[in-house]
Image 1 (cartoon, rainbow, N blue to C red):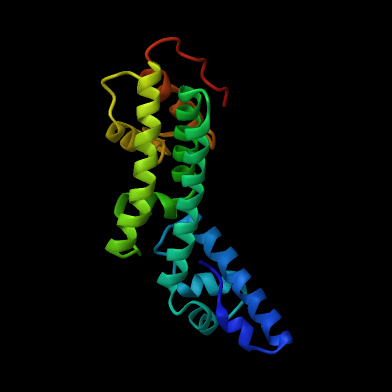
Image 2 (image 1 turned 180 degrees about the horizontal axis):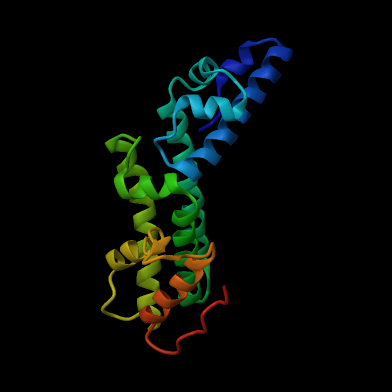
Length: 205
C-alpha cells in the first residue's frame, strides 16, 4: 500500500531522491505512531524524517493517509502471526504464541493499540475489511484450542480479544512501575488461567 506511481514519471535522480524521502517518512511515521499513537502530527513526522511538511503531503496526500497505511501494515503482521498459529499442529501452542504476539504488539505499538480500540483514522469500510479478517482468524484460533481440549470451554473469543489488552495499561499502579517485559508475565498469568490443566512457570523479568 506504500507504493506510488508518481515515481515512474520523474527523472532518475529525482526519482531516487523522492523514494528516499518516502522511505524516511514511512520509517519516521512507524516509529512515532508506535511511540505516541495516531495523534502524532504531520510536523513531527516530517521533522523526524528530515523533510518538509509539504513533502509529506505531496507524497501521501495527508497525514491520515500515511498513518492509515502504517496501521494497516501493522495489522497485516498480526494477521500473519494468526496464519502461523492456524497451521501449527499443536492448537494450544498456536493459540499461546498468537496471544502473546497480539498482546506484545499492543504494548509496544501505541498506534496499533489505539487503532484496535477505537478504529480511528480509517473508514467504516476499511474497519470491516481489516478488523473482520483478523477477527475471523482469531475466532478460528480459539475454536481450534477449544476442540483440542486445552482451552477452558467457558472462555469465548470475545474474552480473548479483551484479555489481549490487559498488558496495555499495566505501566504504573500504586507507585509500582512495570518493567519493559512485564507483558510477558501478564500473558503467562492469563494463559495459565485460560488453560484447562498444567499451568506453566512464569517468565523471569
